[in-house]
Length: 66
Image (cartoon, rainbow, N blue to C red; front, side, top):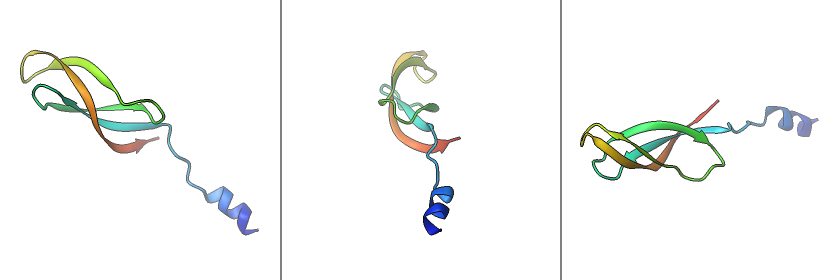
């Protein structure tokens, strides 16, 4: 009986995770949602501090998403 209860009450991990993206040039940050099993992200995006495009790298996970 207890085994069946443990299976039913087990927490399910979400498929997506919110991560903090940080500019390599200026340190500007924003949040992005990606798949949990995917590799770390690097994107090119407009940086408002320097008024040009910049590379943003994933710095850390913030939270799980539903």
